[in-house]
Image 1 (cartoon, rainbow, N blue to C red):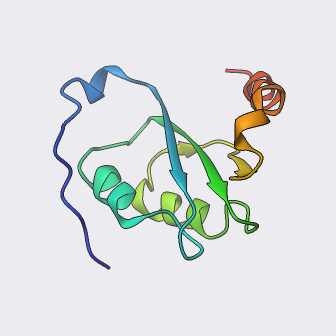
Image 2 (image 1 turned 30 degrees about the vertical axis):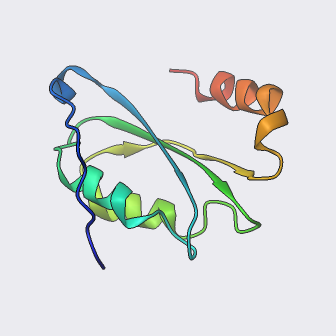
Length: 102
């Protein structure tokens, strides 16, 4: 349950209404450094959209973790792609983004 330090800071996070959060799935969940990032800001009333690469597990437990860390946010449908397919996923990513309709 470590929380690695992050060397940079988003100075104007309050000016964003929609936040895309991307990460690889490690051990069935998002890496702890992503948790560190999410805990540094107030995402209340923001729309949070997860996307990830994985080795076969999809989004796994990461959506539940995201909901726990951002309880007052709207969490939209995430996108998951196998790491081995990510380099050739432009069409799939485009379809996912089009389907979000925001």
